[in-house]
Amino acid sequence: MSCIVLQLGQCGNQVGQRLFDTLIEDNLTHPNQTKLTVTNRSSIDDYIRDSLDKFFIQHENKLTARALAIDTELKVIEQLMDEKAQSKRHWHYEKKCVIEGRLGSGNNWACGYRNGSIAEEKILNSLRWQLEQADRVDTILPILSLAGGTGSGLGAYAVEIVRDELPRSFLLTTIIVPYTSGEVVVQNYNSLLTLSHLYHSADALLVFENDILQQYAKKLVSHSGLDRATNIHDMNNILTRHLCSILQPISTKTKSTYDINNLLEQLLPHPFYKLLTLRCVPQLSDQALDFSTYKWSSLIKTLSQMYINNSYLDEGLNWSLKPFQTRTKSLANIFLSRSYDKEDIENDLKQYFNHSSFYSSSISSTEYYHSFNYRNKSYLNYEKYLSFLSNCQTPVSSLDRIVNKSWQLYGQKAYLHHYMKYDIDEQTFLNSFVQIEQVIKSYNQL
Image (cartoon, rainbow, N blue to C red; front, top):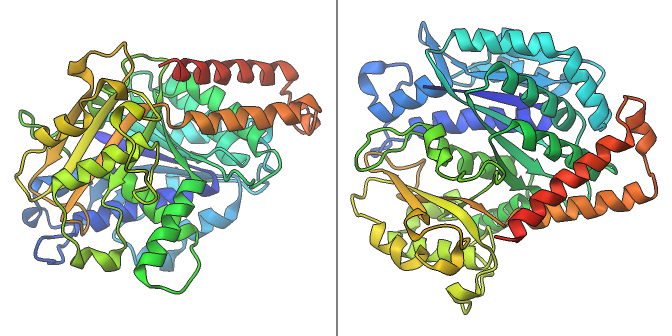
């Protein structure tokens, strides 16, 4: 089973590159800290072999990312393909699968969507080349930002054509919500239009928020003792560390490996509820890892309190809140634990997450959560690592903010002419409002 990553726009390409670096970094992390030769098949275990087969094409001791890198500007693509930079990595991109433009999309969703139609043949040819290198593709992983023009507009178009080309493959789209304070003046228009299109074409939307990522990065930098400001690299490291924790091989008591699509399908009991959030613990700086020891019970307790507080971070929690006071409800949850520790976590999960107040009344108690584990390898340098993937109400506040700010602009007809010159009329906006407002209403009624 293979996974093909679609890196869309500047954000998608920066995160995508860091994603493959993190996968390799995790594969090279050995209990004795021995550096493994990544292409030596006789010296690597099943975990590493499964990971490499899923995310890389292996030929003549070279690793080629199963990825399409797409942007309408040259800057980021040139950085990806820089020979000096690539020589320092264990892997590289296939030139056939790098699609670049020169005109950009001007932070305009409509322009980006138009550029997607222009690049459709190149995108599909690159995708088909990747498909030819894989025995079977179970998951397509688009990565994009909602704010700009290329990631949002071209990204939405790319996901649509991939859905038409591969109707049976699972489309897990990772979306990055822009800062509340604003990155571009029309970011809420772009976000609204992207969300409405992706909701039709993707199977699931894994939501990350720049505001949260920056808070997280500030916390880790301050705890590391480094005297510097946080930057985009810190945020991308956090995002990809979270993301890889659910993409790397996982197992159950009865099955040695579990495919990503089968894992995620358990989070989607109804096709209209597609919003996924990811919380992970422990949340430590690299400098603190060697001096920290955790028990599964304490990690699960922390996750429970983060959920009750509707928070992504383990700091600033109101520990006096009880389960019946939870600020979010979910349709389904899964837990993925990784370590060399053979201890079972089921009893702790039952203690902290078997509360009916956590879930929609339509869900039976047997479907509250599912757990997965990998007990023959830890994750990165963490002794224990626990990922909590949830289909819940948490992202709704961000969607509500996007809709409200879009209505404020739309009510004044502000900036609409920038979209109309690319044949996006007012009805397209109204349809998008209706679609996302219905999503918000449905989640609020859980």
